[in-house]
Length: 279
Image (cartoon, rainbow, N blue to C red; front, side, top):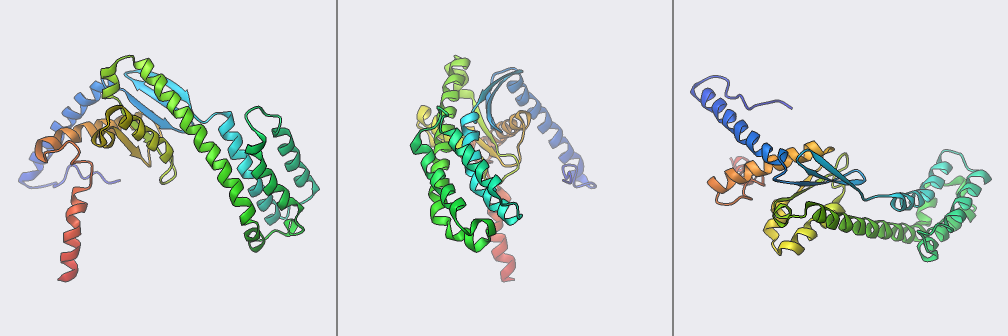
């Protein structure tokens, strides 16, 4: 990404613009220090964990544990059969392997018969079909009505588990902070990582958590941050630093700490786009 902060390169505005960025760096540095000294905790949702970053300390809470990953593996079984058929790897071996796994999982205390019934029925229908060894796209479409309830059931179980584990972690974090003022200063960041709109459940949980505590939609908007390209606690903390600096500038010049949480040029651009296309 090209750095344009030093532009314009020549002319009377060059020096002033450089000084502006120098002053901005000073304010950014002092804001970052507030995070470094623990005055502003940051709760980060990333990969399978939630991390509380308070100063230099890190507390880790596992959200997606064995049960969650078992649900994902169960959802992969029909896909495994489908891809095996596409790749010409269909035999009694694949069928027996799947049925044995489904039989073994019944003894797992995490699952009830009701949990497993939809996926077991779907897989049984699939492997008993004479079309499975020659599976093609058209044939898969025929099994949609069987497969979709199974997938929906597993997704619902996974979502419930993640929501429960997230809420437990948030209560544990509050207890760990053990300070109502620090809890009020805390920011919540979702690191979406490599996929667009990833980990939205985590964002929804953070939003509900803050709203339940504050009854303020403005506080929710202010303190919950979502970054599609973020993949680390450090990156999440830097996003909070940027938010805090933007709040300072927004409140001073645009009468709202939230006014910088938008693409101002993009909003004005709606009129500009209309104007240039009319010329």
